[in-house]
Amino acid sequence: MSEKREGNLFYDKESGRYDIRFGMESYYGGLHCGECFEVKINDVWVPVRIEMDEDWYLVGLPLKRLDGLTVRM
Image (cartoon, rainbow, N blue to C red; front, top):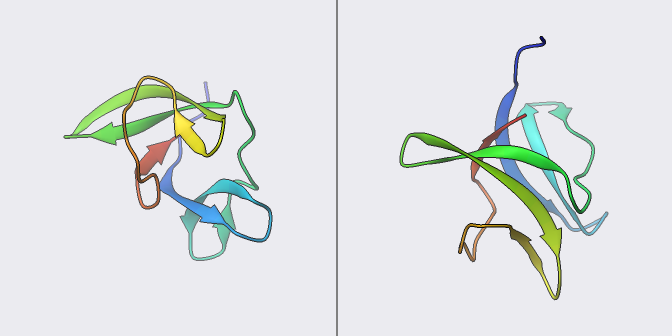
């Protein structure tokens, strides 16, 4: 099993998608609807799925702001 990578979620205006930044020059490449990963909330890893309606959201988490969240996949 490969090791999970941690990074931070950010919105890429050019692609219109959220992406994960793993390092200074290391990116996931753009998230698509239905992709699953984990978000760190209060030092607990919570499994989520990203979806798009009028805006991007994480299924099961009532968060309005996704930018900057610590994630791993």
